[in-house]
Image (cartoon, rainbow, N blue to C red; front, side, top):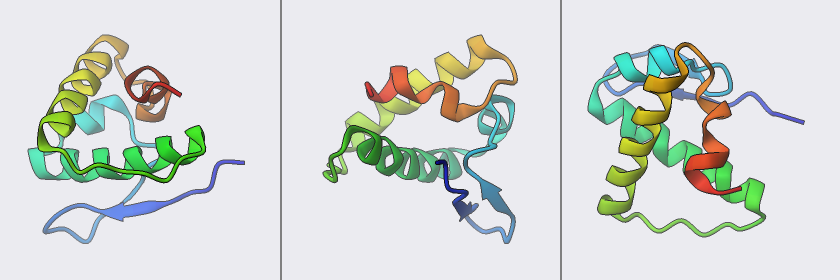
Length: 90
């Protein structure tokens, strides 16, 4: 079962349903909300893998952001969560 979790965009009161965030919306975000989203998606992926370890490595987050950006650019308006298995290997 997929639980609906929301996060707030930096300096905004707008809530984002992370399960419904489209690639188009992700690509339109500023850098900080993108990074915050990646941290959330790291936790989601860890749960999917059955692990609960997160290493806050800036280089790794930057690589993940680049990979997700590339995947989203290729996928059009698909959901970000559909891109995650490839990015986070689960």
